[in-house]
Image 1 (cartoon, rainbow, N blue to C red):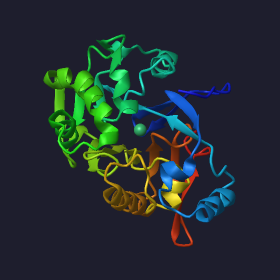
Image 2: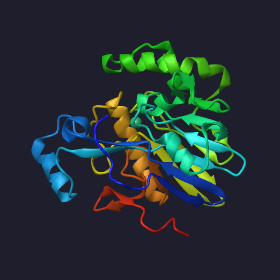
Image 3: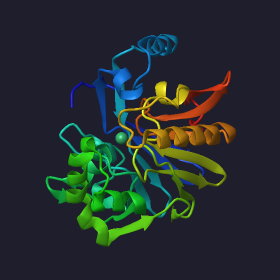
Amino acid sequence: MSGTSPARPRVFNFDLGSFKVAALLDAADIRDNLASAFAVGQPPAAVLELAVSNFIDQDRYEHCFIPTLIDTGSQKILFDTGCGDEDSSLLDCLQELGLGPEDIDVVVITHGHPDHIGGLVRDGEPAFNRARFVFGAAEFAFWTEGKAVRPARLANRDLFRRICTDLADRATFIEPGDEVVPGITAIDAAGHSPGLLAFLVESSGRQLLIWSDAFLHYVVSVQRPDWHADFDDDKEKAVETRKRLLAMAADRRLLVAGHHMPFPGLGYIGRINGTFRWIPVSYQLNT
Ligand SMILES: [Zn+2]
């Protein structure tokens, strides 16, 4: 990965009811080609206007990778494992919280892309050797059966098989509507990948929507949910999912954790003049 990080925090933690939540910055890439990544086929003028009105560059953008850790009081549950390469900071982030990989009780894999499964292994060995693993049943079947994988994802399929197949006997396979533990329920977010799962987390009346990769950019994906992202495997389904989750987050005024939003990847969805906006957290969680 390219890009260097300025000095900044890489762990952001807060209470959600009786749960303790931490956003962990595994990595942050600076990349080119905003339009070809998130605005496939859109006129350059439309991309430029969106960028200018949001005070971001029309081409270069930051892509953060932010796994989420939830301590329910009885179990420590990690959502996704980051890229797992030499630039990955996930284990350092855990260390800042006084935790090692052996302290993680459950690892939830929202979907099988490299930046979410890569950290499952460290130096060729399973990184979380005490954990139970949770996969979406449809996602696991998609990669292991390997049918209908688009050419751009063939290397991804091989990586998934190499890393995840051996974890099956320590894994639970879930579907939308199933709980990981009481208070954490899977939601269908398919599109970006065939079995992508989002999660609704509830504790003592407080709620958090972990939307994983249903949204890849905090401006483009949220303000133009019907624009196609190159990274989405089923582009039309990804559009449907974004619209459904945007309405849900806005109507229920949910706190959202987004894996690829600007760190700490926490915000709300506002409805403004018939469109949606990502409204980053400021001090709402400092209570
Ligand atoms: Zn991702």
